[in-house]
Image (cartoon, rainbow, N blue to C red; front, side, top):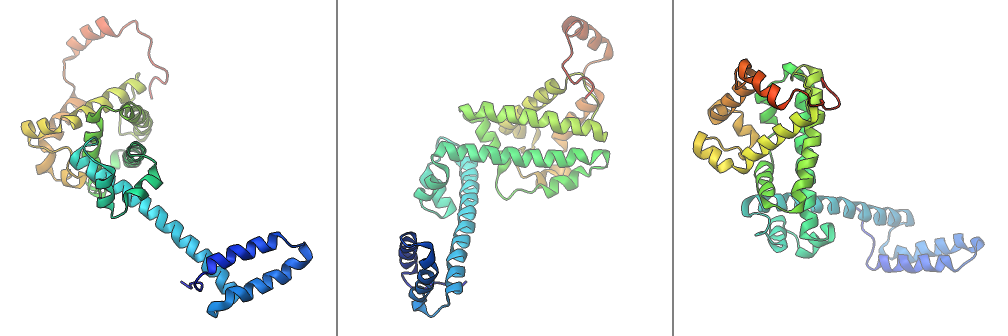
Length: 280
């Protein structure tokens, strides 16, 4: 990258102010004289202009990179230590930046936490939509291996859900809405059966899944499966069969007999109006 001579930013600002104080007929001459003034470093005017623009572009790229680095550091620290116990200073140290830069990008720790929630929800949404769109042809194990995480997203989600802040309701609402959309895609693609309760099914399954995630230590204690481990690790049958086996049995073969289901349906469901979007 070509760099301007020392003090070029100051002289550029002065040249701009000078241009504002002259009439249009003299601007060209002032610009030429400005180029000469900027040329103390031995560079042509066009090179100086390129240098200025290039420095601004590089700063913008660095700015975006720093923001992502801070966000990933926050996810890592929140996942390891919990939301309340993690300070802005600890996040800054993890990211290799100053605490002031964290505040510059996110305003507050709460603002950073919200950005983390949005990022994690977006990753989950993208992975689920891609999986559902493939229909029965989906290679589940391969999809899980591709979902390898650079930061502990699942463990962060477990921490965030247990935190009890106002953000949790917003995050869950977003995840339920996302689930309703990608499950509808699963129905269209032939992966899922239609339902009379598209929103209800999405809400129940999301709560069940998130509940197991919050209680992941007990799942691991009872079944030997760590639900907060990287998805690529759960692609190994030895690491997940004890959990996935019972889940698939309940989802595909059911839990209660048809006779019991009829009694329960008559007592609790019949007569209630179905949700909009029946069959989706």
